[in-house]
Image 1 (tube, rainbow, N blue to C red):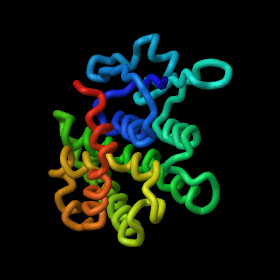
Image 2 (image 1 turned 90 degrees about the horizontal axis):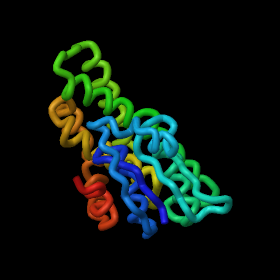
Image 3 (image 1 turned 135 degrees about the vertical axis):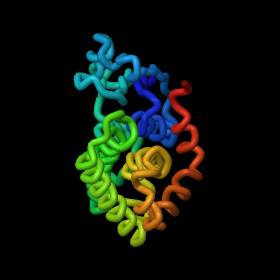
Length: 211
């Protein structure tokens, strides 16, 4: 059994999608970041950086294994199950490259844009412009790639798509106003969102945790 610690954020949705895609049994422990539950001592033992998502896998040699950081968890689950990440070769490294593109670029930039343009009561025009411009650039990079291949790593759906989906969907809803110009210029991204969003496992994972 895998225990999943998560919340209803784009980062928090990635791992439920992966677990649903892999068909692994898991139990959910909601960590309400709005109530600072991520700073609880028990959660700190699982996730030293006090961030969701995190997992504990009870079925490992040497006892339970905790894994934190979404990119690491996705890679771990892919290697555990043999799914959604090629075992070797170019397809593997393309998927890993786009996975790290998401964790190092797309999500931080969209997260900062969301804070400065949407959630913050005090608006900072320079910060909003910087993060809007970078979000625009990243989404156009993504659109170019998806004009070449149906999925980010190529012909096959992978952990790169799983990582990018919740954040990209959030860009079309929560960030619709600051990104209104960009969203009208990325048709391949919209087609990919529809394609990925039709997957039953994605739909189930996006509903976890139920709050």
